[in-house]
Length: 132
Image (cartoon, rainbow, N blue to C red):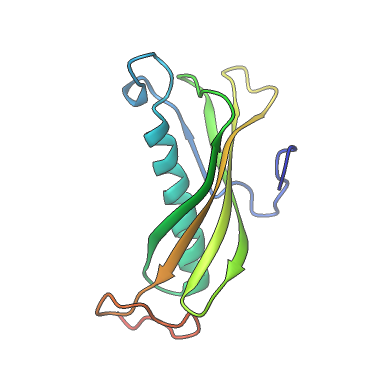
C-alpha cells in the first residue's frame, strides 16, 4: 500500500459515506470518526485471522493528509504488517471518492495493533481458536 489506491482482490475492508452528523465544528468530518472507521475495518480484518475476539491495544504512525467532506465515499484498506504470538499489527489506509465518484485520494493512514483474547478476556496465542 502506498500512494496509489490499493487493488486488493477482496476490495476495501469497510466502505461507508461520510454524513453531516459526523462533522466537527469546522464542517469537515471529525478525525475521531475516521479513526473509528479504521478501527472497525482493522478489527474485523484481524478477527478473521485470530479466529476470535480481538481488542485494539495501540495506534501508531497516524497521519492525516487532508480533510474528508460530507458525502465522500470512505474506504478502508487493511494489510497485515507484523504478527506476534498474541498480536497483529495492521496498516490501514483510508481513501475517499468525492460525490462524483472520481479521483480517489488517500486521506489518512496508520498502524493499528490488536491482541487476540480468550474467553476470560486474557491474551491468547493467535494459533489457539476462541471457544466461545
